[in-house]
Image (cartoon, rainbow, N blue to C red; front, top):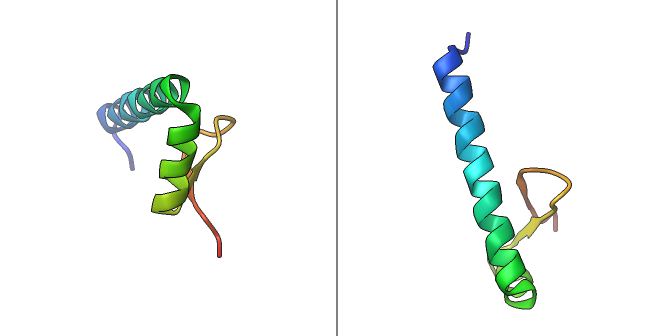
Length: 55
C-alpha cells in the first residue's frame, strides 16, 4: 500500500530527473547520446524512464 506522500515524492523525483535529462539533451544532443551509449542506457523522451540497453 503506497502512501500519498510516497507517490507524490516519486512523481516529483521522476519529473525533476526528466527535466534534467531534457536540459542536458538540449544543451548537447550528440554528447548526451554518446554518454548514454557509453554507459549502456538509452533515453526515450516518449517515456520518463531511461531503459537499460538489451544486448
